[in-house]
Length: 286
Image 1: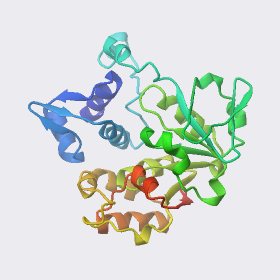
Image 2: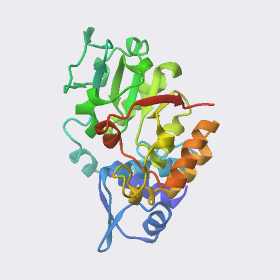
Image 3: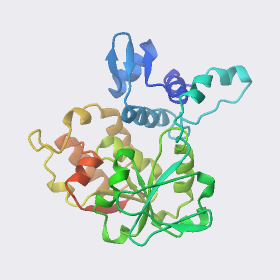
Image 4: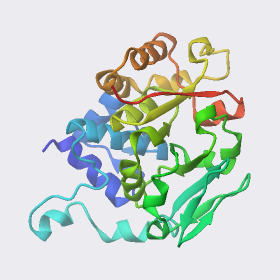
């Protein structure tokens, strides 16, 4: 297995945000642009860790997830990846799912229908959710947890205004989110990620459901003076752009990626929501 995948796996599963510079990590940094150089270390933001995870998946053709990969073999092999620090560094709420309900949607928790008001969220143990009932609702997976308290400000497409919104998680709860989303019927699943190459790469990686993007994306002002797009972020996502282009299945998907490349466009969810830009659902599959 590639050394790069092993290095990313060890970092993510240890719950760390920094790593000593090495030949392997220098190669990863040069390929992805991820990681801020501080002395003899690379430092990673939460967003960079998410993008490292997607890069790791791409190294195995999407078959293995470095966040959850467990090598077969004796315990000594496992010890190379798992250590006690992983457990002590977990958030107290790391196993809970964060949800909100828009419009008339509700989620069944411990047998009782539950809904949220503007500015409120549900923090739920995964086994308390009625998963069968959830498949009868529309489900929107949200990339950035910081957006969840303001979920009511998202201008959803008309057909998605009655939906359960679910933060995609980071670390321990990401596995449960993945299971819920995989069980969801494709026509009732939508993915709302950043409007940038990394966001498109992650959304396209599902190969199913819908992707929520700004309705008037061809008219977006991605210039440096527009104050909407983050060109510096875009320029760190060349590897993600390549992954997204390889995963694109429709002319519409390819058109969006071509627009991003032509205008160096990287718009975060928070800016889309703060400007009340209406969203549209495009197909995430063929």
